[in-house]
Length: 147
Image (cartoon, rainbow, N blue to C red):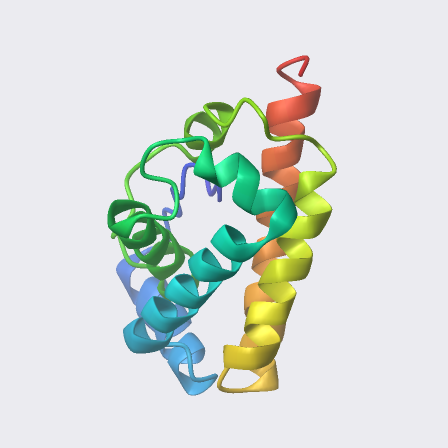
């Protein structure tokens, strides 16, 4: 079964290679993922709303978190096995996170893509994946957990 939150995407190797090649045609490669994640992390840290929540937690916005973001997006966009973690658990620890923060998070991600994406197709692809992840994560944190 395929899931984005646990990043278990059990596609056959041939399908993964084809998906990775399609992403690279759009301009999404490891170099871009790294640049995008660093830009997005800096944007979150600088944001009045999300930066406060992030600043309260050790490691938030730091080198290790950015490396986890790069691994996550490499797994999502390029179908690598770089990320192994639990996205829900990682965000559940952000006790100050509120449901309305997701709209801000998506706006910052969209702005990041608008400034960094190599092509419009890349921006659209990454944004569609991000919207799905945000919807699933929001539901896991606030609907199923009684938050």
